[in-house]
Image 1 (tube, rainbow, N blue to C red):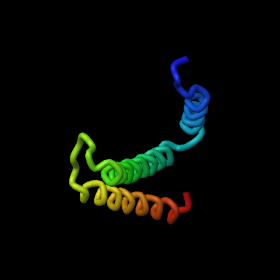
Image 2 (image 1 turned 120 degrees about the vertical axis):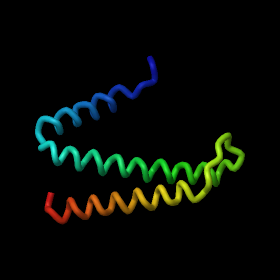
Image 3 (image 1 turned 45 degrees about the horizontal axis):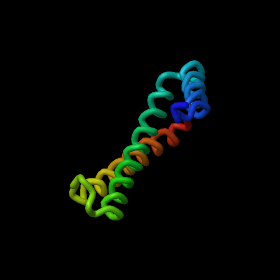
Length: 89
C-alpha cells in the first residue's frame, strides 16, 4: 500500500479522458485555464495562511506577494468566467 488515493486517481483520470473525447478542444482549454487560475488563488491564500499561523516558517515572502497573487488570480478567474458565461458556454 503506497497511500496513493487509487479510486480518486482513477475517477479523475476517467473524467479527464471522457472530457478529452467528448468536448471541443477550445472548451477544454478554457476549463484548464480556469482550473489553473483557481489553483493559483488557493495556493496564494494557503501561503498567506501559513504566514499568519507560522511566523517562524523556514521561508520568507513579503506579505503583499500572496495577497496580490490571490487578488490578481481571482480577478483573472472572474474575467475568464465572465467571458465564458457571456458567450453561453
